[in-house]
Image (cartoon, rainbow, N blue to C red):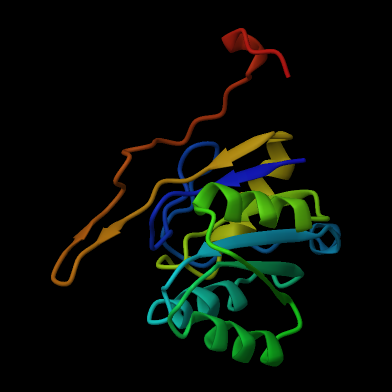
Amino acid sequence: MGLFLCGHGPYDTPASYIHHPCGPPHTLQEDIHEASRQYRCPLYNVADYLPRCLDSLRGQTLADIEIIAVDDGSTDRSAEVLARYAAEDDRIKVIRQNNQGQGAARNAGLNAAAGRFIGFVDADDWAEPGMFETMYARALETDADICACDYNTVYDHRVLPNALGLAEVTFSIAECGIDR
């Protein structure tokens, strides 16, 4: 299984393992679209942020995806926002659980996963349209076990790009002395 690790976004500059320069995403072979990918979105009381997050996932150029939203006991309008989106898009699956924290919410999403690749997106984040297609293509191209990306930190009046300062890098875990 591959794993996409992401921080806080908007995600528009995948960097470690892949680099996606500004511009249109590259076109991929048909077989890439046959594999299943899921995006996990753990959430708690984020109704105001959910539409932007879910719209960014629904708008991914990699369309053959499953979006699993794990509502970790929200007490705001998050459940009704999720229900509306799930009714509009059959790729969205909703798991509702009592509040157990972000780790338990991510684990619930992992337990529901059936595909080869998994991406995590926090509910107050959003992803640029070609981000996951780019990450997926690079993971296949390099046979990567892990694919990570940088992110931009967005404030009301400014954006701090490339918060982690990652550069395009591909490395072997075996060369680092790590055994699978």
